[in-house]
Length: 158
Image 1 (tube, rainbow, N blue to C red):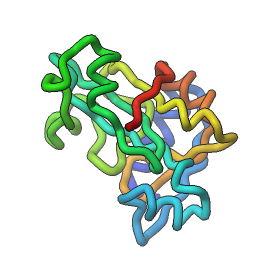
Image 2 (spheres, helix red, strand yellow):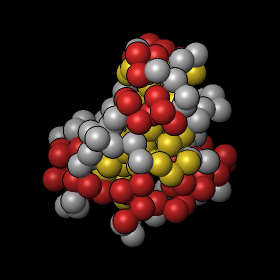
Image 3 (cartoon, rainbow, N blue to C red):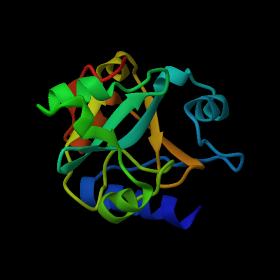
Image 4 (cartoon, one colour):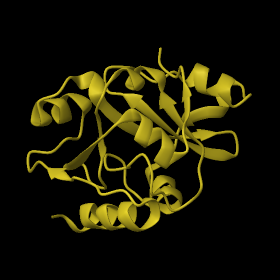
């Protein structure tokens, strides 16, 4: 198993008491469509963790792979203007969140960040999140994901 996937597995167990079932795909799961094809699930079941600058804070939005995230809706949730919301820079994500783009899991972040969970993910019994690398994912129920990430379920898609 990749070192970063192993680290996520260990952190999930130690920090959250969650036994992660990591699946690695050598061909990669960089996009939601790639992940869904590798796993054999619907693209809507891919729980993509995206990191945004929202005013003075970084915010994680766990969105369905079938949806496009709405910066306007995130701005409303954070009581900001839309111009104050945008994708975070890769270096800042690594530094603050502790993971690199494409492998950001929905929980086990290095900093205590607000997390929003796309309400459409709650329609599934199982969703799949990144497990520390762009080639590793894990299954989880949306309710357990919400619980472990401390997420607020919200309408965050266009």
